[in-house]
Image 1 (spheres, rainbow, N blue to C red):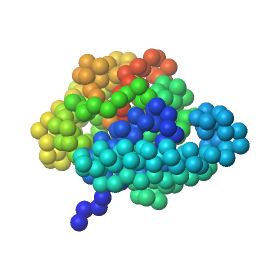
Image 2: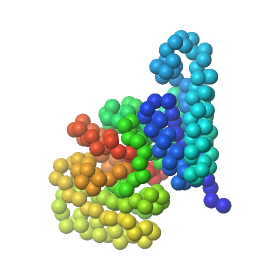
Image 3: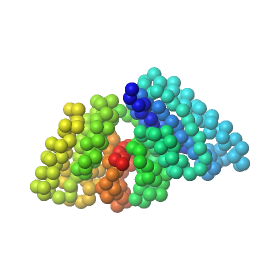
Image 4: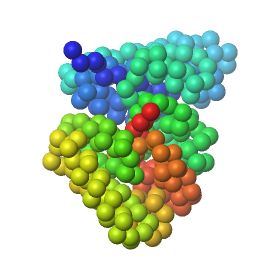
Length: 280
């Protein structure tokens, strides 16, 4: 019997975390997953939600009521579309540490987290809750920006760096693409026009095709004389990709996408969901 897919979705009841819950629910329906809503009590966040409760007397009741309301709504709609279950868990302390610890405790297959967007990713993926979870987690992460609402993806764009782990990653991507009958563009962005790049690209295609049981995969080699991140953004806009997928094993490549160039108005990256596949 196959193990049940498990999704963890941290929530603080903000708009961006509610968008993340929507994505977690829709993916959970397709995976026939168990979904866990995870709330970490935080006095500062709670004061924004209920400023009149000076002593925090009603904080726990408030949180439980909000989570129960979310659970009920998710189960009412999600259960009939394939979601296996939805529960909520409350902890108190540091949201990043507790989210990472609980993801291991429940053996989550995927963490779905909301982000405020450019402000969240401003400093080399460091300094915000969502980005710290992405950086430190050993689980796959799906990052949903605040203004991004769920829609069935027509195209997933996988940023490949010719790693052995691509063979595992592409199988995960194909599984999701099959849910929605989506296309997959497996894209390698090069900063040169060398024949060696073309040769490596052809070799990669030959090696990875046996691992793909799906006929809607396109292999793309793009040369862009500036940096990789801008080249990838340019491709995403042109190809109209709905979700960007990247493998985080090779941190230098990950950093190339999400560090220097974020100060250069990378609007596309903060307006589309990001799926970070962990290879360790």
